[in-house]
Amino acid sequence: MKTPKVADIVGIINKIAPPELAEAWDNPGLQIGDPGAEVTRVMVALDPSPDVIDAAITASCQLLVTHHPLIFKPLKSISAANPHGASIHKAIRGGVSIVTLHTNYDIAVGGLNDVLARKIGLSDSVPLRITSSAELVKLVAFVPVDHLEQVRSALFPFAATEGNYRDCSFAAGGTGTYTPLEGAEPFSGTVGVLSKVPEERLELLIAAAEVSRVVKALLTVHPYQEPAFDLYPLINKGAQRGLGRIGRLSESLTLSEYADRLRTILSAPALRYVGDPHATISKVALCSGSGASLLHDAARGGADVLVTGDVKYHEARDAEDCGLALIDAGHYPTEIIMVHAMAERLGRAFAAAGYAECAVLECRAEADPFRI
Ligand SMILES: [Zn+2]
Image 1 (cartoon, rainbow, N blue to C red):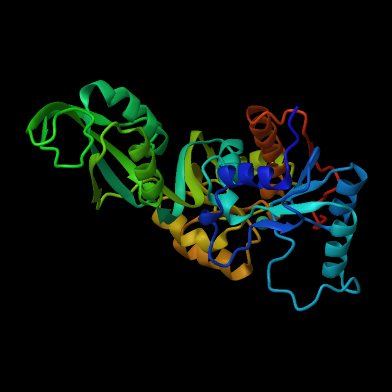
Image 2 (image 1 turned 60 degrees about the horizontal axis):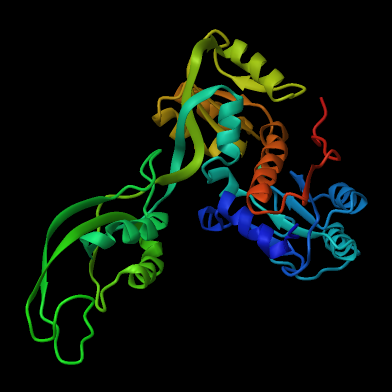
């Protein structure tokens, strides 16, 4: 049995919700704790509230993973005399490290917005507002024919995924030439004699951010003393990531029917909606938490309704003016679903990493602060 450290679990979380996806104003990551501390029990919750930190301490958890950050704006003091400082003191005294997710988990593939999209019946959903597109580079390497498989499999981990496909590459045969000079120790051929060698031209798309790692891997696995390779910048972009989702329902419903259905699915005590109750709903946009700022993206995308939380009066009026229906299902009901989803993801990731003995608990100490 391997016992993970806080840093190991942060590494796993960074794969699920890459921090570089977060909005510039956000503050995800390890907020409190010692990266070297061992962890045998993890708790997942929406908010790092005092009740939740108490629950983590009572359940003997050494790590609390929350969606909302505990530390968001820069702090001028950490005094236990104010509620925020008291929470920080409580976590440190209780030996609980805190890692937070937030917009990186909203945006990530398989993250909160994808969880919400599945839950409210959308299929083939795509980001509603694009926030980043991966820069791509084409790597072309010239490889002696009998080393093609070895080099290709060493480079596959760096190949960009294309839709639902990985390990994408292309190879075509040709003839490479070279004359080894004095002092060379050629893999094949003789110093001073022109060599003509059957080679494969191997091509892969890779993320620009991976260039130095992929070149290192190529130089390690390629048999030549001076491997020949080219890196081409590309105009085409890689996978797009973004806020919110837009997709279709498997069957059309009226707005009032869909609102009723969402109230049940999200266990919301009540929800508010804007628009004609008899309007037909088939294309749905969503953004977990506070997403009314995406209403124009939803209207431009041809959505019949935007499902989100925290809708203000003037945003409701704005939606009416755009002819877009809105369902305000609440911040808490559209986000509390991350607790179960994230606990499951962590459980699977721990098993795959050999940390199966590290328990993952779903916090039961939370409730929507709004009552009806
Ligand atoms: Zn939120």
